[in-house]
Image (cartoon, rainbow, N blue to C red; front, side, top):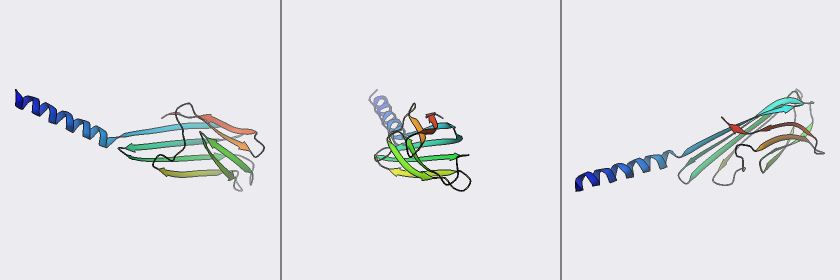
Length: 125
């Protein structure tokens, strides 16, 4: 009986450790609509104390060579469209210093005077 309890305990500890080591992965997607179109993808990979995140946001069919402010959660970027009316943001984060983005968070592309030209909501993918 003691051997059986010891084996059960060892299996439980191993299963917990394996689950802890695997961590969790989150991927959220937002389709941006309005003037032109765009998309945003936010990924978080948490393995134990190590957390990495990546965000990619892109837009197209916007006026060429125009400045915009892109907001996703509590993060903000300034972008300028290229000659074809496109922009792209790609940024990686390590640790807990990353945007606070969850399912239901909005992503928006705005003119410098605050007019929203594209918007969407992050949903699980």
